[in-house]
Length: 300
DNA sequence: TAGACGTGGCC
DNA sequence: TGGCCAAGTCT
Image (cartoon, rainbow, N blue to C red):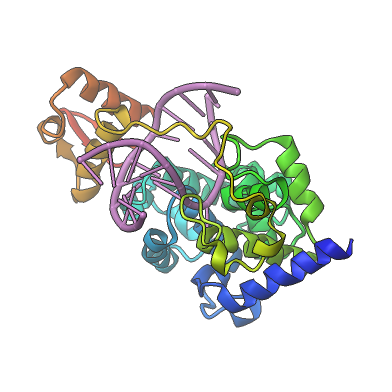
C-alpha cells in the first residue's frame, strides 16, 4: 500500500521536525544518566503520564529518577515515600502501583523490566496501553500503542469522525494495527509520532488543522469537519465527590512530616460521614496507614 | 462494563 | 464561569 507508506513518511517527517525534547525519549545510545535504568525511566514516565499532562509530570519524573534510578531502589523505599513524592499528580494509587511493580520486577524478574507484552501487563498499574508503550519505547518492539491521541487522530484521519467513542473498540485496535509500519524501529517511531501529532496539532477541543501535515488526506477535514454526533465521554463530577474529599485528606498526610492526629483530618471536610467513608477507603486502598491513638500516616 | 479514581490549566 | 480535557487502569 503505497498510500499508507506515504502517510508514514508524512507523519514521521513531521515528528522529526516538531517532536518535543522530553527526557524519557532520549534514545539508548544517547542516554545521559548511566545510573538510571532507561526501561525503568520509560515505564515510570508512562504511568505518570496516564491522564496527566507532560508539564506536570516532568519535574516529578526527574525527582523520582534521582531518588529511585532502578526498580530495586524504589522497592527498598516505603510505599508512603512513593505517595509523598507523587505530589499533586493526581490518582495517587498509581504511585502505590508503581511501588508494587518495582517490587515485582525486583522479586520476579531479577530487577530487569520484562521486554514482553504479557509480562509487562501482569505488573500492577500496567494495562494494555502502558505495556505496549514500554515495549515500543523502551525496547523498540513492534507493539501497537493505542492511547486517546492515537484514537482521535485515526478517527479523524481515516474514519472521518471528530472524536473517538468513550471506550476503545476492537475496530480501533484493528485499525491501529493495520496502520503500524512493518519495521520494528519505524513502528516504534510511528507510535510516538501519532501520539505527538494528537497532543500538539490534532487536539481534542481545538484542532489546528492549518498546521497539520496530513490535513489534505484527512477524512474529517475533507468532510468539512462535521460536528460529532455519537456519545462523548461523560464529564466527571468533582465538587463534593469522594474523590475531592480523598484528595484533601491525602494532601494533609502528604504535607506532614510524620503521623497526624485525627483532628487534623477532621477539619478538611464538613460532612463527617463522607469524611469517615473516604478515610476508610484510603486505608483499604493502602494509601493511608492507621496508627494507635487515632493517628494516621502514609504507609510505611 | 459503566463507574470510580486527582488535579489543574485552558478557552 | 465552568465544562472540557490530559500518554488509563481496575473492578
